[in-house]
Amino acid sequence: MTVRLQQEPFDAATEAAALTRGRSDIGAVVTFMGICRGDENGEPIAALTLEHYPRMAEAEIARHIEAAERRWSLLGVTVIHRYGRIVPGEDIVLVVTASSHRQDAFAAAEFLMDYLKTRAPFWKRVERASGGTLTGSWIDAKSSDDAAADRWVKPRGGREAAE
Amino acid sequence: MKVLYFAWVRERVGKPEEEVVPPASVATVGELIAWLAGRGEGYAHAFENPRVIRAAIDRAHVRADASIAGAREIAFFPPMTGG
Image 1 (cartoon, helix red, strand yellow):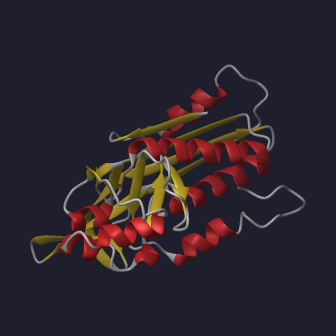
Image 2 (cartoon, rainbow over the protein chains, first blue to last red):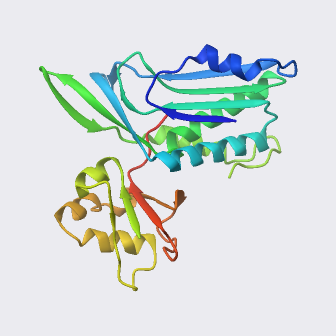
């Protein structure tokens, strides 16, 4: 598993290639990128600034990757989460999962993203571009994100529940 | 113990971290929040709605009824908005 927190942009293709290089057991790679939109609740934004709790963020992401590895047959996982100032169009987060067959890679990537949204210690502050002056405010957590994470707690198809 | 604050909790308290020595009667995370809220205007504002405050002890999520005995680092923050 690879977990990186960084200010710099990442290259998704490079990260996906690194997971599969020299291997013939991987049959599926799912790559998810979260990208900074240019609006928040219909209002244009100038940028997002992501604050994080450094050592806890790494530990929490690693813990959820371990949970995913217990639940699905994974052959590799990479998670990269950026922090600092990010402008619309730039990437924020990358999740790459590799498995023999696509179902495990798809499910694990979705599981990891749902948990990153609600359990990884990151906070987004938005810079609004309004009337030539910048005003900022913290983005509120969404109940829809909590619901998305909660659905993994329920046992599905006899699989063990997530922690 | 070391207390850390993040996002708007940090802004309202006015500092990212500090060492605190709560009285022995403060045994849980919830009691520590109540004690911190009494330390001044910024703290009172940060902790005015304890139900929305999330906490971690030594970098693991905990609930308000968790014991703070033996904790080296306690963090307080709003609900997370990563990803």
